[in-house]
Amino acid sequence: MEGENRLILLGRYPQQFVQNSLIPEMEKNIARYGEFFPAACEVFRNCRQAENSLYFHHSYAESEIPMGQEYHHIALMERSRLLPGPVQVCRSKVLCFFTAFRIQPSPSAMRGHHENSLIQFPDGIPPMIWEELPEIGPSPIALPERQVCLF
Image (cartoon, rainbow, N blue to C red):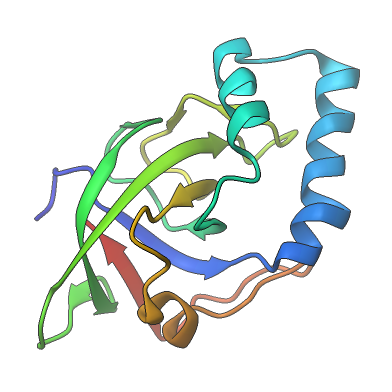
């Protein structure tokens, strides 16, 4: 499973935090510093309120992961290893990534970096996301005991 652009999710941002903090900070950074990646900014403008989508903080990317990456499975992990148990079928698509520094839309997750992402689940957000991922906000996130892996 390594090297397949898997994405390890550490936490999810609540909608109120996204609306009140995350999006205004991005808009401020774009106004102040310009658009780092105009194509990614356009995708974000069109998809930021996409149905069945959430904003996430994810672990270090094992490889460059492009915006638009699609996944077909979801599973639980602990300490970077899949937990025994069923792997679930789950369609998902990364609509956009976001830079960690001067946060704004980005066309890819950079290898080796923790970053944020907007992910859509066309068939509905799976219960595993709600049950296993902590909500995060303005304070730094501690590595949760369990993670959710998309692959």
